[in-house]
Length: 176
Image (cartoon, rainbow, N blue to C red):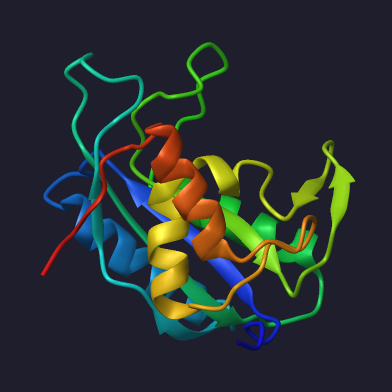
């Protein structure tokens, strides 16, 4: 089977409301804001419900999705910065003490046309924890079934199977 053609993928997540908006509304608004910035969304996965991590702390479940975009420019860092501005518009608060803090919106550049960059002070591509996150792999594979990890070349479905075999899952459920 051929590899998925190059693409630019953004992971979306939310587990907190904002005013009268529920996480689904927040993710849809984030997609609209991306479009208003000139980033054209070409594919969107289903929404997936995901248990918060670490488990059993009573945190609300996350709503996750992945979209493929044609960005307004060819600069991955500029895309990341636009995503961070959208997060701020949605009252995203970054916790320095709690990596797994609840959030209104999380936008991650998952893959940018297969670019590999390890400059952690600016942007790391692909996202360094794709292979550990079923809540990214499941929606990504829904819209890009032949996607390969840019660093190791492994098909995404093999990464997902390895994760499932390890039983290190976030228990994602596709929503209707």
